[in-house]
Length: 263
Image (cartoon, rainbow, N blue to C red):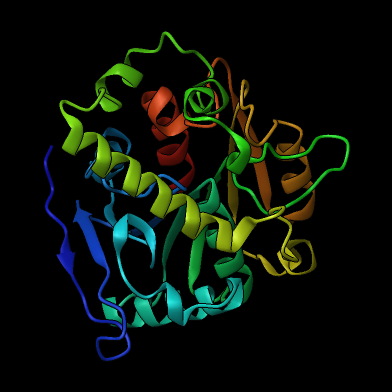
């Protein structure tokens, strides 16, 4: 299942993101969540690559990559991803995103509806309900995070993908990457993840699948119907037992819904 990333040049080398790619068929551009892609090619990406040409870039600033200094806000990031698509030769494609990657995907689809054939959003952030706030990641202690992002802490995938560091060097590297990724995430969602998507979301014209974990404690399931109500051609599917990490917690159910939707 191992896939090695390649480095591409965007804007004449100002950005050099690592890009994971595998599969054949229609191109599917995948925007990862706050945790980055430092664990490499994970099972949910592999499941999609059985049906599509999956292209998963590392966002600027995540996984200790450069480029975030050139991006001030969500609008800059959307322009960056237009340049990324140009560099990859992508004119029209499926687009999917998880968590903050869902925010990026929604903003891209709103800005460039001509480029997105179909859109998949999994537990996206980007909207706000006063009565049901999104959990603040930045005040959680390390031992509190699993209980917020996973629906079932007995799920074996947690032990498989989140093994304790083998030594102090691995622990230091893991902590460094987590701090780096949370810092990058904060640039786009702190102090709250409402950065104006609600004023632009009506521009999304692509058929849209919204996927949510029934036990999501980070972005509560109440946000699913809100996204569905604001995106004209969309439908919501909630997966029982899963939390915010739905793509990893129940990869078969998640990928089945996506392949059924994308065709």
